[in-house]
Length: 437
Image (tube, rainbow, N blue to C red; front, side, top):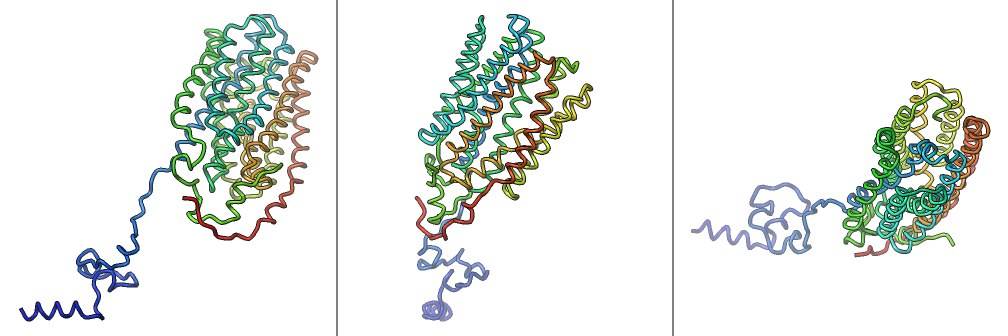
């Protein structure tokens, strides 16, 4: 009894505190002193209301998966002309020049869909743009199944499919990455770029086989079903911003600097000539696409770590060298080697280009500015597509176009090295400010 009273008086002494209060520096104590037993009501753990952090799955990864699959299905449509062009010639008697002009028109509107889609993304959000773009693609492909005249090919392939695939393209991926991620954006943009190649890897061999065995309409029907199916997950799971699901962007700190907040708002006012069969050429395209997945993902990793201008110069240089070799390739193994090398940097330019746009002009301008850069890129692609068909009819091969593209690649090397990024050195000194709830 005396010992019990003595212990009570000892605990009541002002110099002896219980629980976590007796361990102010966090040293590990026995069970009764560690706070798990005889815990004081006035301990810092309770008075400061600390909560055990629980790592939750970030919704950004749902957005990444939905965007990746949408890009995969939509951009597989861009590879369809190369698969069905000879079938169109055989069934309708249209010349290669006439079909190439329709493809060129589609490439031009595809490029125009970039800045238009980017502007709409900045205004309405990526979810609505993805839905409208997918609907345009589905409507255009459905109409192509019943095409009979050349003007119908120009109308359907040139306008709804061109604009739809442009809207659900690289600009969309760049905008989504910069909305949902503050770190690893290069890798995410690279993954979205790889989606276009994955679409070719998945769909081109199947389309080629269906074209040979069943006809070109079955090939288009395959991508039509894929694009129509994508409407469901986009409508259900896609979100425009992290705030829509009550979270922050991946990598965004709980306390945001005034400089970062200002940055978020900153804007700025061969086939037959070389003896290859359709299936062989499609296999090369599929290999090219698979290598592009690796190359674009690696490019995203490099973009987060190295000078983006030097990366662009290297990519354009290797691309030019590959194109110079293409006219002398007549053997399947060398065609596959070309597809392997060229595929590694085919769309590898997307992550560093998008990152440079965000660095120079601000993240809030990525959709619009990168959209117009993409449009300029597709203007050149449209010219090249038409010129390829024209000079093939005129000269009997594509050699002139391959050499010309190689020369332009070396011009791009010089221009990439001349890009200036003065905005990086003019960032204001960070001033802490309260984060958004």
